[in-house]
Amino acid sequence: MDGFAPHRAVILMAATNRPEVLDPALLRAGRFDRHIVVDRPDRAGREAILRVHSKEVPLDEGVDLSAIARRTPGLAGADLANLVNEAALLAARRDAEIVSMGDLSEALDRVVAGLEKKNRLVDEEERERVAYHEVGHALVAHLAGSGETVHKISIVPRGIGALGFTMSLPERERQMMTRSELSARLGGLLGGRAAEELIYGEPSTGAQNDLQKATAIARAMVTEYGMSERVGPVSLSREERSAFLAGSPSGGLGAPFGDAVADTVDEEVRAIVTDALERARAVLSEHRAALERVTGRLLEAEQLEGDELAALLRGAEHDPALAAVEEARTSIA
Image (cartoon, rainbow, N blue to C red; front, side, top):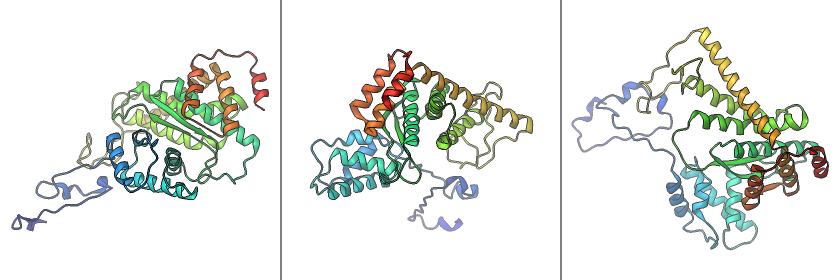
């Protein structure tokens, strides 16, 4: 690489998806010293990408690409191209000449959650438990101020082993979150387990993925964001990062720490997750009538979204607690 100087008309470019594993020597001055981070597109970018990929696809007049762009945070250009392609295939399967908003919504569900498996046999008791679980996610996320809007709840099996899902999207795209917002998000993640414990007296294995995500967030709060009073405002992360990723040293490791600090970190992570679960239980206990009502409707419809879901969630905000909860549950059955 020292032989570049005589060839002033030559510009050498390189790209990687793993900047954290690059040798720092490769990034020194005179080598690959100009770094451009190509991030995932924002909402405006996603809408523009959708318009490019749908240019040759006949769309119904009711299609709102800006609404699809709002519902796809985190998706890259390839994901959006796949979404449009899936929507076109769905329209073709129903012998339609144009792609509707429903086709795009279903395609988004396929991209995010996988293919529907309506032929998968699900025990009725298990189906009811899944419904309570998903509604628990939705109610806690909505009522606890997580900063996310619940767009859809489904108990239609999808993909490999997924018996249902709740789609929550941020109200606005942000680069930072406060401690209270992270705590509220933890509550939403654990709302499914809390609902199962409230209704059935014990959790199931269905909360495995929720616990993994919640534990990862709680650990980041303690070790990376300095949001633990016991551990203090320090960074204990040992993750290697590239020199050109903001806020990190040149390919180094986080400061070493002893066993006592490691034990404190584990205790704090456990305390944060446990506190979030208790708050989720408290929210659902206070709004149990809404939990029963929305679950009953979900069992009937299998999927809730749009105006109906918004109305059900708004109704939960002012729903008084019912004394005769068992009567409501009997009516659902």
